Image (cartoon, rainbow, N blue to C red):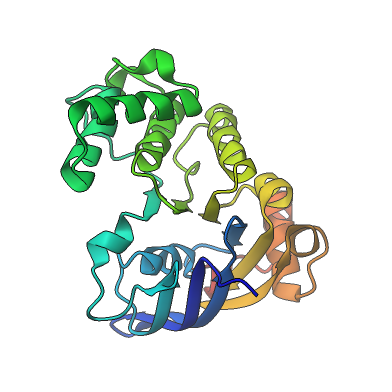
Amino acid sequence: MPQPEIEIRALHKSFGDNHVLRGIDLDVARGDVVCVIGPSGSGKSTLLRCVNLLEEPSSGQVFVGGTEVTDIEVDIDAVRRRIGMVFQQFNLFPHVTVTQNLVLPQRRVLGRGKAEAVKVARENLERVGLADKADAYPAQLSGGQQQRVAIARALSMGPEVMLFDEPTSALDPELVGDVLAVMRVLASEGMTMMVVTHEMSFAREVADRVVFMDGGVIVEEGPAAQVVGDPQHPRTRDFLNRILDPSAAEAPGSEGGGPAAG
C-alpha cells in the first residue's frame, strides 16, 4: 500500500471548553479528492485548518507527504509551501493587479526571480480561464473570478496538496459553476484535494470519497456514490435530505437543526 498523501491520526481540537474535533482518523491517498460534508459547527473547517497548522491540534498527529506536521520540530513553513489553501473569502491584495497577486507570494516565499514568477502566474491564470484579466485589479472582477484568481495564486506556489474551505459559499449561485469547473480540472489532473463543501453534485461527481462529519466526529465515509447516493447512517440521511430538499427542514413537525447543527 502506498503511503497516503495526508494522514490524520486521533486528532482532537478544543477551543476552551468547546471540544470541536473528537478523535479524527482519516487518510487521503495521493491524487484523490476527498469531500468533507456536514452541518455548520461539525468541525469540517477546523479539520482542514489543522492539516496545515493554521489551527494547532490539541492532540493527535497530522502527516503530509510523510512529514509529521504536528512534530514540534517540523519546519512548518517548508510544509506549508507544499499545501495550497483556498478560503471562503478570496483574500486578494486590492491595490495590485491580478498578476501581482500571484507574483508577490512566489517572490517572497519561494524566492523566485521576477521573470519566472510572472511566467508561472500567467500560466496559472490561463489554467483557471482568466488570462485576459492579468492586468485587472480585484475590484474589477466578479466574486467567482476573484476566487479563481485565489486558486491560481495557490497553484502558482506548486503545491502537492490543495485544501478548499467552502470555496463557493460566498458566491452568488450563478458564479459557482465556473469555480467548480476549475476544481474539476484539477481533480482530473491528479491533484490531491480535501474539499469542505455543501455542493453535493460536485461531491457526487468528482470526489473519490466523501466524509460526513457531525459533532466533531466522522459519522460515515466511503465512495461518493454510496455516501451521497445511498447513505447508511440515519444522521447522514437526515442531513442530505435537508440539503437536497430544503423544504423538508421547514415542514410542519420537522425537528429543526438541533444541537448538532450549531
